[in-house]
Image (cartoon, rainbow, N blue to C red; front, side, top):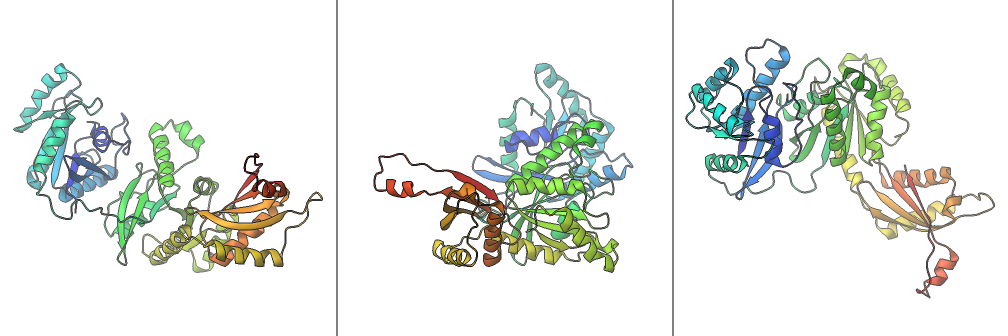
Amino acid sequence: MKPVVAIVGRPNVGKSTLFNRMVKHRLAIVHDEPGVTRDRHYGEVTVKGRVFSLIDTGGFDPTSDDPMKQGIKQQILAAVEEADVIVCVLSAREPATSIEHAEMQLLRQAKRPTIYVANKADNTADEHNALELFRLGIDKLLTVSALHGRGMAELLTAIVDKLPEETEDEALPDVPEGTPRIAVIGRPNAGKSSLINRLLGTERMLVDDRPGTTRDAVDSVVMRNGKPYVFVDTAGVRRKAKVTKEGDAVEGMSVGLAIRAIERADIVVLMSDAADGVSEQDAKVLGLAVDRGRAVVIGLNKIDLVEKGELKKREEDAKDKLAFAPWATYVKLSAKTGRGVDTLIAAVDSVYAAYTKRIGTGELNRFFEAVLDTHPPPTMDGKAPRLFFITQAATKPPTFVVQASNPDKLHFSYQRYVSNQIRKTFAFDGVPLVIFYRARRRVELAKKKDPGKTRSRRTIKKRD
């Protein structure tokens, strides 16, 4: 296993900026507002041939009675317990506070190798001011500027020097190639983080009754029945008008990270509150995934709050409101009690198999011939389109190319019929299908004998 390095510190000292600098990606949200980072956030860093996992944590504030701050404290304690090395971030521009004195006590009790870093040392004056931090009783202090990259080489070298001895399996990837990536999306307070925690068996994600608890998109490796999955917990997506009215720039960035998580995922699990019913915003969020060609599982969560006789009605209502994705797979569950979670994993396995499935050209065309014999394309505007053959061009999502004459005369209802027949025959449940209808004219067939002539092609793309 890779060694683990945790970044800790009080709010607004630049921990997330330092995290982003070290992982070389903008994975954690950076904002002037204290307390933006709430969950543990993981990244991977490679330095001098050593690979380690880096954890960004929320701002440490043990003096607050706010349940949210107390939840963040528990996240920090979990990160410290998990870490092989701790990077304690202080501010070079401000004197030590009572919070940092309490932090020093926590770190001494943890008995982990600790590197003390004075961030925001953008110039010589800041470096001079950082000397005041020795009052905390530390024996060595590195000055860095995460924003500008100053001192980063020295910090990374110090981290590598404190890592435990390299093990034989450290360089092996934790997640095998082909492991499904699942983005969990939905409105705030729909139970996304509760689902991840249920799957992990730990309180990795901060859960709170207040909407908007999760802001970063956080990757978690989940093992179920001996198989790995990468689940990504994302921020709840609210109506854009509501975000704009509140002026919440942080939430705007959270939505952006949620969309990026969808784009990196194979499967999207839409968590919807079964007690409240599917909303217009659920449909819009799901549309983000469908537009990007992702496989879809819809989780009707909190069924423990719904009377048994109402469940079927709630599912029918959901299918009606999400009718633009009739192929989606539905699962009824309760992340709180664990009911239906195994069914959700089975649905993810089935949908991923369909998402990555490839059908041979011969088998496809035998199927296609039967479809054409049973129901040939109708005449449209005096033209009778002809369909010649079909082949699968790609997976993720399954993509097909149909060679045809006059594809622009092929009625959309017939295109939908072909799509439905492919889905039904080859069990493409839970995944969108992309079908291209490419023109193949008689004159084109003649030109194959004379490659010097210019070919003429028209292509129609159909996604269903």
